[in-house]
Image (cartoon, rainbow, N blue to C red):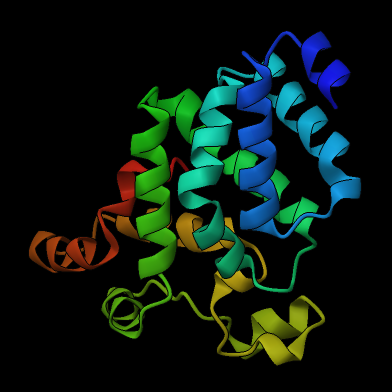
Length: 191
């Protein structure tokens, strides 16, 4: 591992690489056989997009667990980590907010999206965070009916909420009440 991260220009230090692996291991339940691919994924994302490996590591440390919890067992550990990195990277590239700020926002969003009062408040606005029978059937997984959309695709909840909040028919007062319940997710979700 030391030789691999020493050769990767995106990682600042061995300490940073180790912290990234530990965070990934703990937050996404990775096995030691996945460490090389994890570092490679982080390196590839940091090399190709407007995000630094230290930002990815910071985000994994702060919000990875909430994201993995939202993904549940529907995704493999590495798929969940890659989706988290994609979501974080898109927000980072769009907003250029600090990694800590984005990670805190994502953690808040994914935690609150699962709360019954948030689901109800958004449902009152026509934003459904639960799969309908038709959606579950279309996915070929009828067991998803009335389940949180984030359990299958965590960013779906973010996308639905963002699209729903952009509808001009929403009354501002109703929106402000529900956005307080979700942690004002619209700023964190560029979808």
